[in-house]
Amino acid sequence: MKELLRFEQVSYHYDSGGQREALFPLSVCLYEGEKIAVLGSNGAGKSTFFLLANGVLSPRSGTILLHGEPIGKKEKQRMQLRRSVGLVFQDPDVQLLAGTVEEEVSFGPMNLSLPEEEVCRRVEMALESLVLTEYRNRGPQYLSGGEKGRVAIADVLAMEPQIMLLDEPSSNLDPSGRQLLEETLETLHKKGMTLVVATHDVDFAWHWADRVLVFHRGRLEKDAPPEVVFAEEELLSRCGLDQPLLWKVAKVLQIPVPKSLEELADYKIGRKTE
Image 1 (cartoon, rainbow, N blue to C red):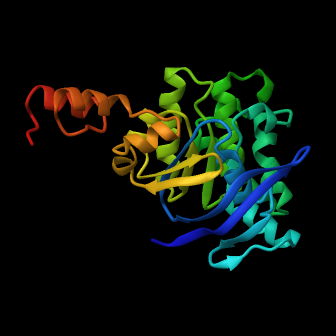
Image 2: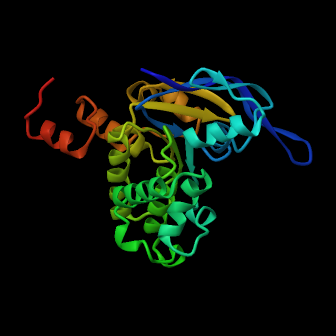
């Protein structure tokens, strides 16, 4: 797989009445087309990792490389990092500032000084991808939480990043909103985008991700496929995580762990045997 972003011994601490280590030296790579779930309790380091990956924060030590090239402190380099790595914040109200949805989505591309026709193309692509075309003249402040979340994703999508980071995107969504979010993520993945989702939802991480990063107290404790991560009960307990519901059901039924309820139903009616 093609390497996009690499952390080499990157660390960070916040200066708030005494230095507080937020991220201990971290080495990790993100590759093209991956679906990565980032797990960990509050304060584990997930958001700091995202802010460093997007260039909002600069490492206290270590090196971040984009396409193998180190990102220094020059604004041109940091801008390139922000273009390549988009960040969708947990609270969309923090991100949405314009008067209409169309103005909101066009804000980023316009700041890149792109030709008008290219700005229009990107805006239309983002609105169509997130099923927001009919909302283009609506004020973001009048939308539901799920609709605001889709606008926030469209904001980032219009910048055409290679990696999209989403910080707890389902935290304020109802079941139908979560389903639409997953459909949106599938659409983005089909476009070839690398998706990195910070979440507390281990059930989502199990059935969606092909790779899981587990953070605990500022350290990356595990980087592995979900079937490896969720098999390590000691790791989960230490990091304040639980096994997905389907794992628990499979343990009781003594069957291989299914990825979905549909697979579980197949086992139950005997269409699958191991």
